[in-house]
Length: 635
Image (tube, rainbow, N blue to C red; front, side, top):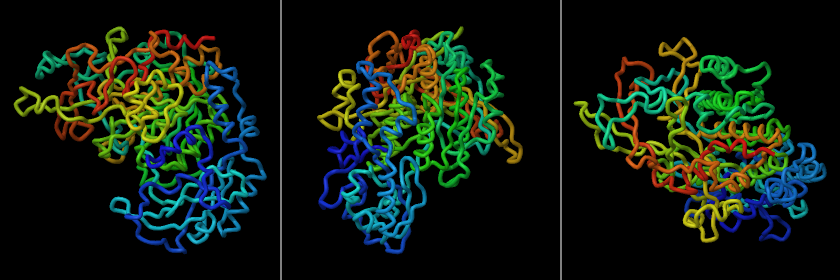
């Protein structure tokens, strides 16, 4: 995931996908830089771990040409390169850049000779287990216990290393620290265990139902929030035209799998005028079993999958959709899901609506993610990640930071907006997504503490560890790029789409009714950059169709090459100049009026310390797709 802020000199190497190695304090060992987490400090040291304690680790393989992989991934994605679009098949990528049988055998021999047991071998890593004593022998470091917050976790006391005799076959090792590495989905989701419903009144299109009996805001009456946009409205907003995504394959990765996804998706499409799913159009690639279901709140991921599948189909109704479910919400399992997409080239476009704050990441995991993204790039596969739902993350984490792995230089980061689609599906405006909430006073005559407190907003900002990629130079303002480093760092996002749950998407899902026994299909409005990511993935499917089916691949160089043109809506925070807000009425208990109603006003375009301004910004990137964007990919 993201690289630790304590290792700025490593950012460039990792961003280019070179092995996290080279410098060595022992000439017979290759240091695996970044394998000691930043929180494993001398002050936090609580002593050596028990030799008998058990360790499970993954040794990621660098392959036969890590530097060449990064270079080819860059060249094949750059419209100005002679290699642009000259993608490799999954087999060709493996043969050219994958680990050799000799490298795998050498790594296995090293690990087993130290007393570790090999538990799995894939194209990407060798998994091992054993006791602390064996791990310390294999990796040339001592494992200690460290205080981290109110808990204590194991971690290396210095960076791990591998024998020089392996000749750089090892990219990195993960698992030597046992702190949680769990990802969360980026959306405004209620727990699906009990049905969630939105109370009315609603607007059917933005501004169609004015809250005439409620207090004014920003000098006038405000509309009720929309019931939830559907595919027809989103397709119109982002210039779909007659394109449907025909012949294009889109994959979606999340954790776990909704047992009712096929029924829910079909029911939703039928109810809302989307094209019906054809036989064989929706596929699922699932593990044999699931783990960490309690820690990961597994059922909460069902709604995430439902949103992603229904949103892609709503915008690109003819695209082939493959859902790839991870065994759990851990980095290791989500990496496995991404690996399945790449190793089997399951799709050309991959939507990913999950992540974690950058401070929770470590360089070892970042290197593993980047390698998968680079392998995808050489095959013509593009990865789209949601940018997060907590703005600058100060309110949620206490620290201004971006999310991971969306801050990788090898993925397309998707930010969020509030979207106004008016009558006859007319695009009106967008703001950066950022919401302030104030409630109705007891006498119903005013809003208390207007405009209220920040509740949620699109993630964005400047990475503390990932070097500024070439495609951002000359577009991203220096004030953003150099916020954490005079040399310039990666800024998030790259592009954006609707995310505000107050101008959100209507989704249909089978949920448990309040009696706790009955399950039934129901619908509710949802938002988050978990919505923006599949919407942009679907728009890219339309663009790939326009390109005659030729894969777009890693899209960022092309996205930035189109910057400043009329192909994007240049989104700002106050497009009308008068302030914008909507009224919401919610069930207190989440599903019916027996617990009462809560009325509030939601101010739009106030994203923590982040601002959507003219030109590139760290809420919406270059903007949102406008009419002409899809057809600009025609070749």
